Figure 1 (cartoon, rainbow, N blue to C red):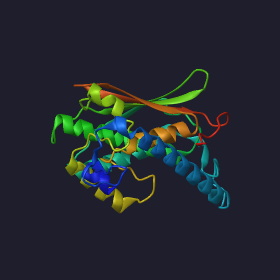
Figure 2: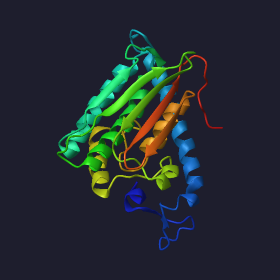
Figure 3: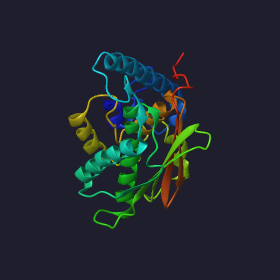
Figure 4: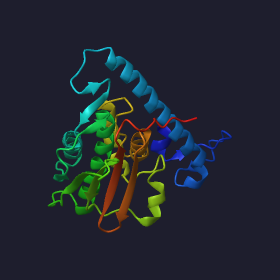
Length: 255
């Protein structure tokens, strides 16, 4: 984490006088692959431990271990909205409104904590981008969340749209790279301090360090889903989260 904050990683030969800039992502493919495998493994371990411990506790209605048979995307998104609004307000003194629409009555089997992590990361990014783009004390356009499911009941899809200025096309290939962030240094330090006070677990959103999006995608892919981002520079960004209904997909485990 110290290397991330300083914006450099020392070369593999141990020569501290020749740091490798984190902007040179072509030289860091091995690191990204290692981190992908590491975090997927850690997610798997947490699922295993969480399921074991939950099954030994008093049964909770609609739950089998940590899996909720009737996970409500609307309720999870609303909780993520509350948390992201708190974080944004803590930083800027205000936060954009979030409008949730679509299949608000939808329920499906899933792990609510995984969905909450994904949505919190996307909403936090959208809120920060909106405030940065329009300026503090402005009338912010709302962040829009749409919940949908396919006719064949294959996927549950959640779309998060903002008008936060978008991401330059040259940066789009990098958004899934660890250590890449669009947050300025002041925001990075502020968010890190907030996270350190709230939660030291993997579920803690590492805002400003570039870990949020790739880890969120790992959560989505763990049970066969996926995540994609489409940006219109100068306007805003759309993020799509595809979640498969549990029961017909195996866990994504590194081999």
